[in-house]
Length: 108
Image (cartoon, rainbow, N blue to C red; front, side):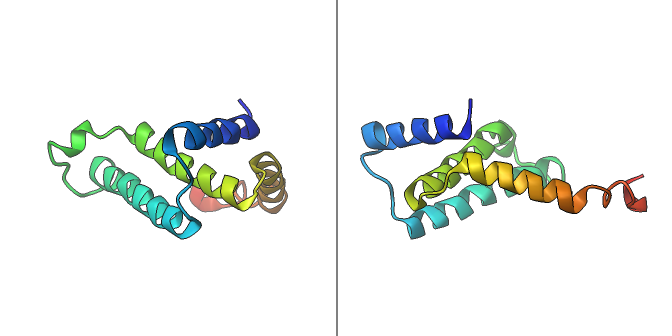
């Protein structure tokens, strides 16, 4: 599935189920909240914090999907073509980091 298809799926969901997009500022706050939920799982499951019984029921994949959903909402409402943005970002990262990580002694 392409980013365009995913963007269209989210847009269709918003228009048929969600009624309308929240404004950009609200969605930015929601994105921050969702990232915080991912951070909580990571800190407790993979970090040094202890995991409460209620935390063990949290699904990291679902929380990451929530982050993507809100990020896609922001892309849709601000006119960002994620297919183009993703391709450009990966090209830039590849050019910038082509040899950088391979030469990093910390990664060996």
